[in-house]
Length: 76
Image (cartoon, rainbow, N blue to C red; front, side, top):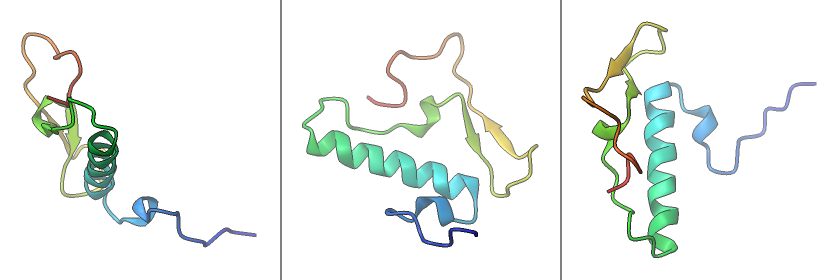
């Protein structure tokens, strides 16, 4: 039997990985704001990789985080 019930937040049923990634980050930002976390501002350019406009394996966007990744990324 296949479970066709929608997830509580609906994120897993978004068609593109890019959209799921953005929705998860937005949900995390809202949680951080609600918890009064000082680092609740999202800067997706601080992620090492983001998804492109398709679900194709080669459609990834490598963000230039030279020379090193920033601690706490993507939260500023």
